Length: 296
Ligand code: NDP
Image 1: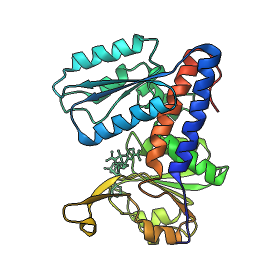
Image 2 (image 1 turned 45 degrees about the horizontal axis):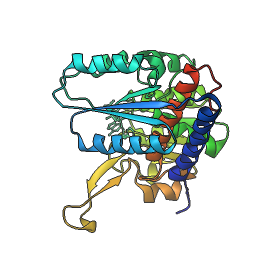
Image 3 (image 1 turned 120 degrees about the vertical axis):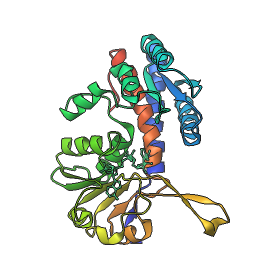
Image 4 (image 1 turned 45 degrees about the vertical axis):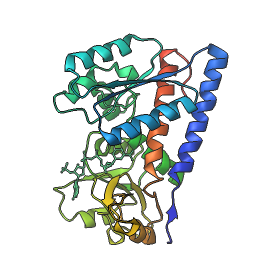
């Protein structure tokens, strides 16, 4: 491998360490402990794992973690009433509703009921608008984590060409806005993009968020390009034994690493950054709520 492996796991541990230090200072100097509420509706196994990890890491950095696990049959009115209670609770600085929600619940309505100041996922329409217009907002955790890794690698991103593969509201679109805000020249590609390989080969930075296992191969890349692989795809792994699975990204690591200047692995790249940024956002929300200086 010629490309440098970007160690998201170590970077995330460092971010969590900084959050923990700041939380300790908030407690010692102001008697404030930030609180994060996570709401999980239903039994989706992947969501249960995410929620467990979020709760564990929230406590590890010294914050209060509150989990609300609701039955899959919970009505929209019940869920909205819970969110209103959390909005009004001064001990709660961040509210996260784990997506996807069961089909009978309107996700947009649910997310837009969260107080934008407590919307640590950055999905509320007000935060989306603020980010899109370059104003202070809550920034979605996964794209924020990608941005932190890129800034760490490059220093300034100004003038670099970036291609974002995927245009979802949770990754692709906010990633576009963040890279544009940092003065990249950004192209967003998606399932209707023509000759996507050629589009990709123009880029100094490739952020892959398509949910297609190992779609991007080394021949899609300009030599030296920096690749951020957001994808989390569970695929069969017969080499590990019958019926076993493994997690791969949207990029074929081996071939991409030979061409890339640097690349995030899956697992151990963007994934750990997402939770670290959730904790950082909760801390930011707490500081704003209390009129205290925000973390850098
Ligand atoms: P979505 O399914 O919401 O969006 C996928 C996007 O990829 C769409 O815009 C779609 O285009 C595009 N796309 C799909 N197939 C192709 C193709 N063949 N060529 C080009 N574009 C394509 O996914 P998410 O944004 O929610 O997630 C993307 C990936 O990131 C998933 O693997 C997910 O698991 C992972 N993820 C990881 C996180 C982390 O913490 N590391 C957090 C969130 C997501 P179109 O709009 O035209 O349909």
